[in-house]
Length: 574
Image (tube, rainbow, N blue to C red):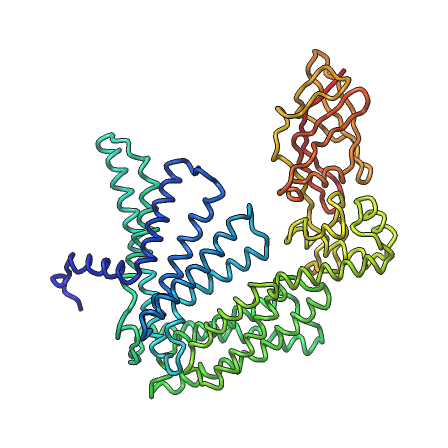
């Protein structure tokens, strides 16, 4: 037990200074990140150039994480020059990636998944990169638990310090009437973005402490919790799935989709359990405990087969999606993990998170990634179906697409309409630009086939545009002399995609209504999501006696094809 007398403030400051010397680039990036966030807080979130906000936050945050990981790897290199060159090259590459991402107003699904997978890989690399040599599993386990404690202590101390300072500042107001509430946003920024990471870095093992080959005795309390609570709960969970598998064999029915989630949760629990009980695998005693945990991967294999059958059914019935392909790869990875753990008798564990990080990165980044493969596959299937049904000239206009939906085979139209809807929702409207025009309305059919979920009958469609204010830019149409802003444009009648609207004028004592007709396709063509990179012409409705320039609209189309509009605009009259 450590005596309070042994605590030295100078020692604590020396630890923080040691962290700065050990991870200089990470500390510099965190200082810049903290300063920039404070700058944004001071300016109410506005900077000189809004498009650089992402870069000045994303790169320092991820770059500091990368800097720590690279330092942990390269500080073991024999040649200092090789370590420096490695760090410079990797940082330069990530700086280029960050600058490349800055040009986009918003990420596509492929970019979001790729960036997320890369950041997850960076986090895992903190634990993995130093221990890629054979026989490093014990040092890896010791280092990992100390790293987790360091991260948790940094967050906890930073949170406590934040709360304490906030209460102190608030007390100045309560006791002395000092209005210093404007300081509040700066306190968590400093404590959590700079101080907490610095505290965590100061606790990361180094030198000989980084590679401890000694397996510490298992703490009795933790062993009891695992042995009498965690393991029985996991076994109960797995037993339930076994009973369900027996029901499938007796009734000869294919499993439903949620089986994948339950099996995945069981697999995750098994992996966590094996990591927690890793020291037991190296003890001479506890033979029953060791045997039980070593048999878990074998017991998991039949459940993985059940998961594979469920995935196969989903793919056969509803086609591919990004999430389903990720589940397929995860299922295959689980097979490898279970077989590998059986062969090594749970004594080698480094490769489990390492293989997960490598597989996640490979299937998420690059033209071969699952999101890109899924997009190409769905676009190819949709194109082939349209061409095979006689649609030689692509893209189809909205009217042509509606005619094709009525004339082609019902099952084919449901499948293709669902695929186009999925592509537009997840990849953006530009992904289907080569197949259908911007005025085409997709996603209105019952999605009993294609890529829909089981029992799903089509989600609501949304069209909106509130990006451009036309009040100061629209010209008075020729022949009109009066202008009025109208907010109560009401739907009078709906005939398919044709909407009959009344614009209510209140410019004179007598309320007067002006009737206009417009199609849903015209709104779809001007949807903000379809045109986020380009400016479109405003929607102008003219009935001869009045003209309505629509400056805002929001349309919801429910599963029953009923349209619920919210429209405002500028009414011109003669």
